[in-house]
Structure formats: structure tokens, C-alpha cells
Amino acid sequence: MFKRIRIHHVSLILALAILTALPVLAQRGLQKGPGPNHFGPGMLSDRMAERLDLTEEQQGQIEDLMAQHREQMQAQHELMKAARTALRDQTEAEVFDEVAIREAAGVVASLQAELMVERALLHNQVRQVLTPEQFDAFQEIQERRRDFRGERPGRRHGGRHLHHPGAGS
Image (tube, rainbow, N blue to C red; front, side, top):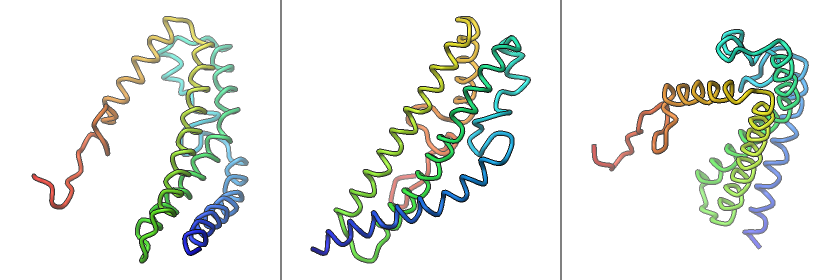
């Protein structure tokens, strides 16, 4: 019975976090320019458009696609933030509750999957606007950005491996 109460407690925390995030999302929707994750009007920089040799029509189509996805992506990022906070709270709780931790981790995983699907959908839609040559150039730019940020397989936190206490130096 205690585990059921804890599960409902986690669900209640997540529901409150979502309700708390809604006014923030509504306010952000009124702002112009890209959001914190650079989706929306203004995301496609002049430099990027120039490097890809985009026509004005292509630029407009891509800006429209990004604007369509911006609100959804911002909402998903806010939910992810709340879900990660709830998961952290469960892992740091005074009383260990495996069921509650697994439930909170499942929520994070589910939100991560939704976010990846949304990103893949946007990526696919942008790809349809680009010529094959432009898409190849775009992929090359993205690869260079990943290299610069250290987002390669097996690398975390800007390319630095974090030292964990007790691990060998």
C-alpha cells in the first residue's frame, strides 16, 4: 500500500510540475525569436542560409516548419525538466522506493522518446525542402557542430569525461 501511495505521489508531483509550466509556456509563446533550444522564427541564421545556398522560398518554408514545431518542442523540454526533477527527487529521497524511482525514470524515458520523434519529424520535413546537395552540406555542418560540442558516442558533457569519486584517475 505504501508503494501505491508513493506512485501516486510521483504522479501528483509531475502533474503539478506540468500545470506550473503552462503559464511559462504561454508567456514564451508571446515572445519572438528562437526559444531556449533555438526552434522557431530566427533559428535559421543568415549564415546558415548562405552556407546552404537557400532560396528565399526555401528559407520561408524552413522557418514555417520550425515555427510549427517550436511550441511543441518547448512544451516537451519543460515537461522533461519537471520529470528529471521528479526523478532526482526520488533518487535522493530519504526512503528508498524502487517502484517510484522506476516510474519516474519511465516518465523521463517516455518524454525523451517523444522529443526524439518530434526532432526526427522536423529533420525529415526540413530534408524535404532541401536539394540533395544542400542536405549533404547541412549534414556536414551538423557533424562539425557535434564534433565541436563533443557530442560523439561515448563522450559526455562537452567532450569531457566526468571524474567519479572512487573511479581510477
